Length: 188
Length: 188
Image (cartoon, rainbow over all chains, first blue to last red; front, side, top):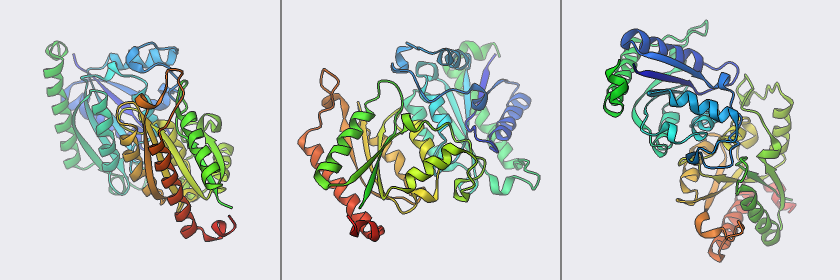
């Protein structure tokens, strides 16, 4: 069975990322029947990269690195949920990516951006060379314009077109997983 | 008198950033007679962005934010020294930038990248939209190819062309400061 990781890339108080991630999780579980592992970086609580060796060596000195490695390695595909800070991705997400290397390699990845003015599209664009450098296989991206999608109570309300776009992205992720990791996909 | 900040953007053990920053500091002090304030993010030791309000509000809840704000506000221009991790900038540098807003506005900025395969040029390119979003005024960039410039003892040895490129960048920074902050420049 395919296990999809959903990474909540923001950790600041008041973030919308957890709501966006739950939206992704809900569509993945209900529409595609995937097993979802939520990876909330606020809970993972990595420090700033503190390994001396390049992660490709896997010579990890710290327990938090080994634990993060174990959790990522258990995934077949991943969705990175990213806010946009100053036209790019936030530090905790880049840090969590930089901590590992081989664990990300050949992993299908979808990007879900959100933001006030550009719907997270610049953060998504900034992430593309990063995930490519890590050898991940991008399936595409979905962007949420927060100004139009958060109601007065602070609740995220994607529209049908965004649900459809996310379903499409998740479908592409699953197809890439079938191609790249056929053993897991067959068991799904 | 103009005060130039030099930010060491990497914090991991074994980093080359401190050596690169000392190179920048030395040229700025000796060649241009600038007062240099070294801002080593390993010593600044900010946590991941933990302010709830957008920094443009300046409604800082934490002492570390107020202290970082005070230090950045004392600068007239800044050089960001960045390694390249996975084709982009490292998390601590983005985090330190995201913590503030008005403090960076209209501040002349130079970028000094370094790296093994692309000399930090992709990290520099990734930073450009970020510093622009913060309203900083980019003076240009210098890149150091580490593979060719670190000797067997691990000592950074820039060549004369790189010294000249850095001097040019520092000169442009000073000129921009003269234009943008005439009061400080006149007193220099």
